[in-house]
Length: 135
Image 1 (cartoon, rainbow, N blue to C red):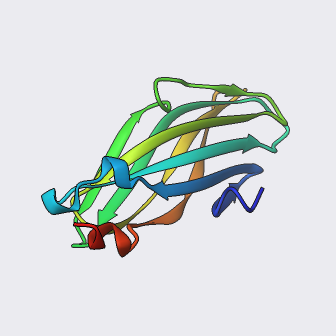
Image 2 (image 1 turned 30 degrees about the vertical axis):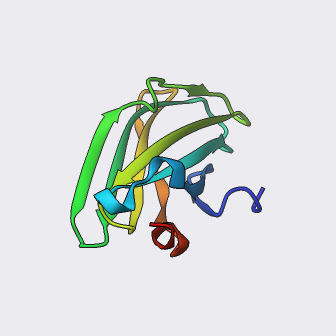
């Protein structure tokens, strides 16, 4: 598992794992555009069902500009995770700099209706130096 997912955070028994990859074929450094894809796996290691309701991202570029992104669910879904279940999804992030970072949290609803804020680990977005060498 650690080979695939480079970053992980655990909150109250819920593990969020992240794998991130730079996509040179969707990046255009000469135009100031870099793109990464990230794969997230959310594992419910708690003893209760949880439903993912919202997400909050803090995306920072190499200039220190911060963009906060809030939304319902993930990629159009609000999955219900029973104890022991996991949910995977893939999304992407464009930046106008070759380096940056992402972090954030999900808000889940417990079976009793109370919220649970689950941390998404900090992970760097870094284009390889060779991405600029081919131009």
